[in-house]
Length: 224
Picture 1 (cartoon, rainbow, N blue to C red):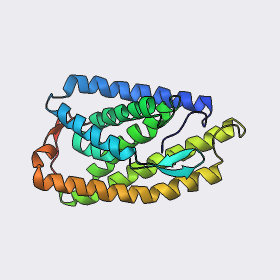
Picture 2 (tube, rainbow, N blue to C red):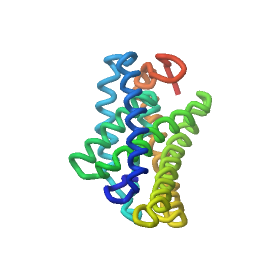
Picture 3 (tube, one colour):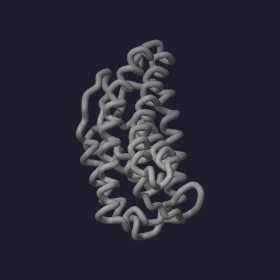
Picture 4 (tube, rainbow, N blue to C red):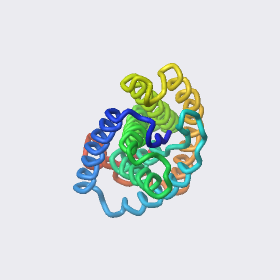
């Protein structure tokens, strides 16, 4: 799902940067006020694991790629704000050091994989009561990938329309191309995320009981 340099219309890139800077900045501000020190090691370990998973890319076409995202996993374990910081950190490192995703497109990549991935994954997960936690985990992970890919397809189509075909990919190509692959990738991510959460529930339940910074309260203990 990484968008490279030179593919998007500059106005679309600018909008992505504005949204990403505002939301990520607010997340850092919230975490600075509410986050506990014991959450930091988990953030670091999770960032390392997701970083490795994201480096395995599947070429899709049109300059884009598909891969496991890990945003829902980060949000479920850490809460959406801390999860977003983890994914953003990964994207920045991938972009600047490994050239995975363009510098100019970093705002859009953060929007699609970080903001949409974490908050959609979290919201879908929280819809389900505790006894249906596995279903919520699976659907949250799938939705995070699928909706993020749909947003990417819309951005590609919008870039094509605004630039008269100079940038982006036509709607009739971008949407089936992105969604067709990511509906499958999302299923894989759903199984992997559910497996990880289930394993942690059995072996390290204290991780799932750690306070999470959410929308409703500064701290919310989640046990699923």
